[in-house]
Image (cartoon, rainbow, N blue to C red):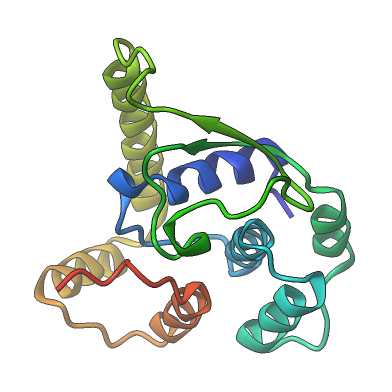
Length: 181
């Protein structure tokens, strides 16, 4: 497993801010990292460990959760910054209804009072890092696959078998509010 608690926390921070939605989550290195992210999201949502582990096993079609993944989930108790004035509907119905989260340290941020002067700068840096990583991944992908995937994506057509795995991982998210009609 190549994920660190900081990486998972950063991904969760992106997922819980409505201005970032909708989000497409997948793993280019397999499905274990995506599974850990989704389990962490479920933990944030207040699911019991047995529930998110059972979902992980069912969706990934594996006999059991790996030792590393299990240890990670047991120890993962991050500090999460929540936007006080806007949560997505899929996260606790869009509002905090508890005093203390059972696993996470929750910090509420009133985004109306936060100085956003360097926010655009930080957002641009994150975007540049993402674009650089995507470029590296495209360079590592055989050209015929990369081009056919780009063409298929732009036309909304997919025929490769690994799309099933991706859609299963996305199905695992099952997040209400991501579908905007």
